[in-house]
Length: 266
Image (cartoon, rainbow, N blue to C red; front, side):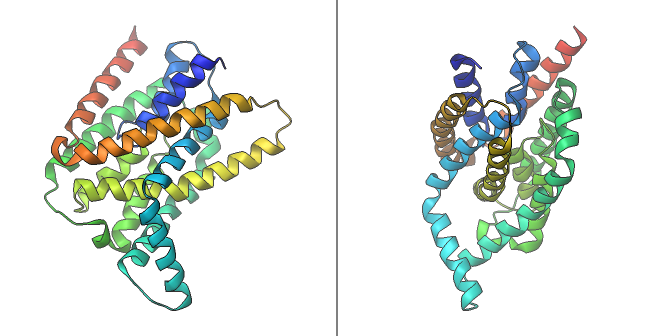
C-alpha cells in the first residue's frame, strides 16, 4: 500500500468508526470503486486498534472507575453503579464474540462486497431513523440493566456484516430500549473496548504466525492517523449529538446506499 492510500483509509476509518455510518463499509468501498487492492483484515484491525486507543484514552477515567469497581465486586461482593455498568459491558460483548468466531471466515469470503454494503447501509439507516424518531425515554447508562445490555450485544453481533455499522446498530438498539441519545452513544463507545481489544489480540497473533511479509510501516501509520481522527470524532459527536440527533447520519446512509446501487446498475 502506498502512503497516501494508507493515510486516506486510516482517516476514513477514524472518522467513521464511532459515527453510525459503518467504518467497515468505508474501508471496503475504495477497493471496490477505485480499483485498489483490498487492504484486508490486518489493516482493518490495525486502524481499528488506533480507534480503540482513542476511546480508551477519552474514557480513561470512566474505564478506570469501572475496572476498580468490577474488581471489588468480585473480591468483596460490593456492587456500585460502576461495577454494574462494567458487568453489563461484559454481557453485551458475549454475542459479538460468539458470532464473530463462528461467522468471520464466511463473512470475509462472501459479504465484503458493494451489494451487501449498499443494502445494509439503507436498511440499518432506516432502522436508526425509526429508533431515533420513536424513542422518548431518557435512561442513563447506569439504568441499562443486563437484559437491555444483552439485547444491545446482539445488535453489536450483527455489525460484523459490512455496512451495518457497529455504532449504528448498538445505538439503534439502545434508543429502542429507552436510552437517551447521549447514553446510547456512551454505551456504544464503551462496548467497543473489549471487542476491539479482542480483535487486535487475535489478529496480532495471526500476523506473528504468518509466513507472509507484513508491511508494519503501513500498519503503524494507519494506526496513528486513525487514533487522532477517532479522538476528534468522539469529542465532537458527544458534544453535538443531543442537538443534531441521528437524522444527518440517516440521510447520509440513504444517499450512500442509493449511489452504490446506481453504480452497480451502471
